[in-house]
Image 1 (cartoon, one colour):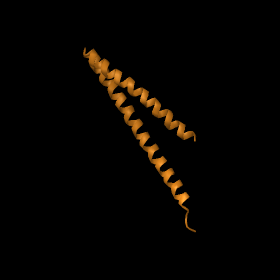
Image 2 (tube, one colour):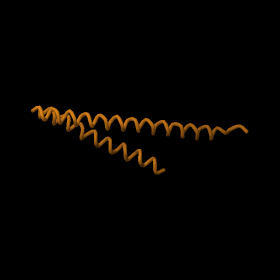
Image 3 (cartoon, helix red, strand yellow):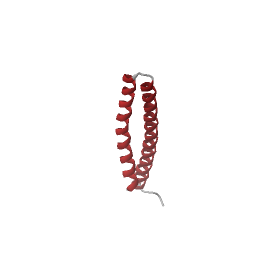
Image 4 (spheres, helix red, strand yellow):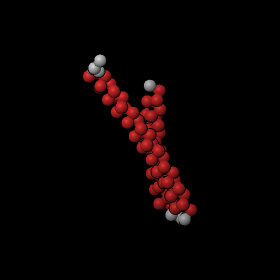
Amino acid sequence: MPRRPFLYRKDLVLKQSQTIEATLWVALRMMEERRLLLNKLSDKETNKGLSKLGLSHNQRALELEGHIEKLKELLFLTKKD
């Protein structure tokens, strides 16, 4: 029995959703790694007396934290559906 065009579209939407979700998980991991790196840089620079640079990296890590939390909310919301 041939499949209807509706089923093709449904399959396409499902596959696209899965691909988008996988990409968002990768983006989340990358952002978390970058946040950790920025925090390490901030600590090293602050300990070396480079407080301005350390503060700058700390601020960037904090900004990244906001994006990380938004991505987590989005990803965990899609898991509930």
